[in-house]
Image (cartoon, rainbow, N blue to C red; front, side, top):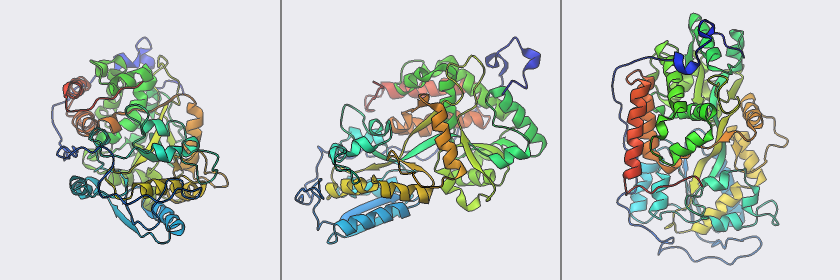
Length: 481
């Protein structure tokens, strides 16, 4: 779409036009640090059950009588897909008792069990209380899942599990070298979510550049509709669209430098331009009033009610927001709008990666059982069941044949196709959870979008957080290879 709001300043780029100011403030959230007091493990607890006999049907050597303890995050995807897969485990090992638990309090409920050396056998480590992946890996609290990756797949014994995964999923579970510590089960498309129906009411199309975005937000405001909302209490959702926006402006190398904690990475012109663009949404009143006080559920509800056009989110939102979504909503997702014609990457650049991280604790009593449960979940049948139930792709590369996809899922598939090679995968959220959520997301970006920091102040603050993390010898460092 062509520019609609900058014609009087055709000699200036958007980077020069967006200048605003605000007052200083601060939001804090509960600490996300984890396992700081845990003893390290060398990969195997003293109380592990005896391994079973390996065979074609039992390649991981599961003890057929040992109990299996599974804890699932009861969030946007619910827990039924896991329960269904556990039934297949029970069918394969009828003498084994499966204990299933679901919670949104992953850290607070499981930290005592890790500290006491009695963690579950399989954990869906997700949600607001997600345990810090980097800390878990650094403290050697996780089982290496290479045996699972090299095991024959359920559907084709001539194909290893690793060869059935979508691109990038296995690599996301690696931190240093070849070991695979995490199995990301969902395949998440992050971006800007909207209702096609609500855009049609404004006789509008999704804006492909920032001038068009601002023009549409202005048009919506005249109709009493906000341009944007987001989970103000959890503003680390904003990077779901902001990070690929930065990559589009300056190239994926900008995000790599940020992930690598390189000096002055946040001072890159692409970051400045992206922050100023988002800040203009706030300054012009295009953010839904009261957004800084909303939870993820509340912001999604306001969005499905049609009070705001756009929301940054991941593909779990379709299932999570289903109770309040009108039947004619036509939920869609798009890559972020670009800034202007000087962007380094084309429109369509998007963030997509593995989501819903499953881990097998190193001191689990039945780690082979935990890995076998994941092997079952990575079958075509379980993958299709997951997709049908929660309206999200899984890490299994397939599983959609014969399924009727919703508008949201089809939009996600189409977005991935349009992106082609221009799919980015920022790693801050799994390499440095505290830095990403508490500091960058909440104390930096969140404060800026609430109008309490200018973009320059936010960048300076965030760069300080990143520099402190880089200098902190207690924080394990990771880099893009």
